[in-house]
Image (cartoon, rainbow, N blue to C red; front, top):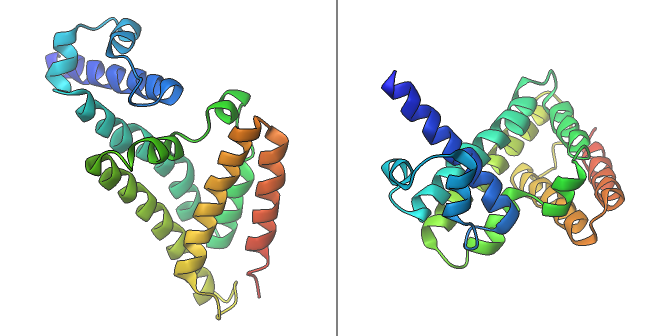
Length: 198
């Protein structure tokens, strides 16, 4: 019972920290606000996360990464066709709330804020990016084997481009505070992926 309570407290802290970091950035995130939101004590916080940095790294690994895995990686890996999986992800990426458009991508935000400042943050963020690129690359490799896309495509470079372009679309929509910018940009990326077909 105590273990479950401890696990619940940890999850509450991570979920609240994610929202605080998403809204304010890591450096401006307030531990007091996180504790106020959860109703937990400083002792509970420091039991699970001895430092604010430990909390931030756990948010990357256990909230942001798991969300990307569940929403994107699983969609691609469970699709009947790997290429259709990628196209499905791009289509779904247009369905962002105005709140998400206003705040941008949590991964992008932390990359821009923390990668130049802290090597541990950079290491954790790079692992997410590399895994994302690998998922695209695996899907493109399978598509080549199935004869769905052209054989002359460099799948490693193409996987990185699709990742970077999607993230760029989300960043542009954040800058412009516009769902129309997001849809237009993602439509062009969708067309690009379609152009890879034989």
